[in-house]
Length: 62
Image 1 (tube, rainbow, N blue to C red):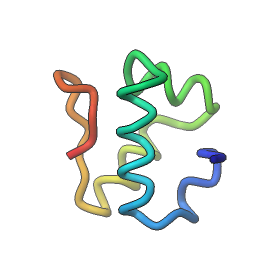
Image 2 (cartoon, helix red, strand yellow):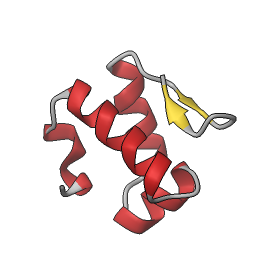
Image 3 (cartoon, rainbow, N blue to C red):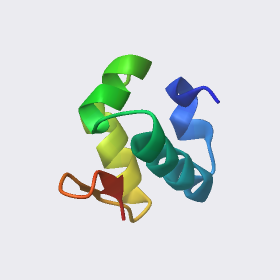
Image 4 (tube, rainbow, N blue to C red):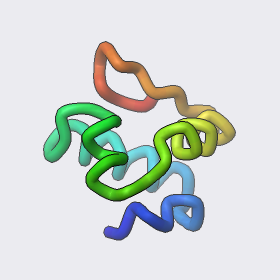
C-alpha cells in the first residue's frame, strides 16, 4: 500500500498499517518516513488530529 497518500486513507486503517510497518519493516518512525519520503511532522500532526500519538519508546502510534 502506498503510504505517500496517507491523508486519503481511513484513519483507523492508517493507524493499523503504520503500526504494522513499524513492527515488521522499519526500525522507527524516522526510518519509515525516510523510506516513503513523507514529512514526519505532517504525518504526526495528521495522526494527532485522528487521536493517535507516536511513542518513541514503543515505536508505535497509540
